[in-house]
Length: 75
Image 1: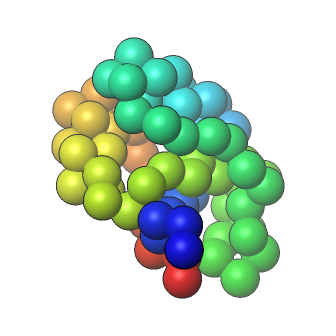
Image 2: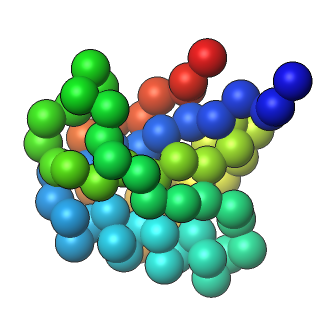
């Protein structure tokens, strides 16, 4: 069974792209995906990453003032 994933959603495409770059710089596996409609309608891109790293991702995004519209664990 694969490890659970989390998704960060954003208000803007710029924020999603910046978040992806910050995770790459921090060697955190992540990828941009289409935002699941049941999670948000704010931006068409979301960032998927391992759920085990959710606290670290939140800390990195907060430190660099990248605003999310939400962070969700996918089952």
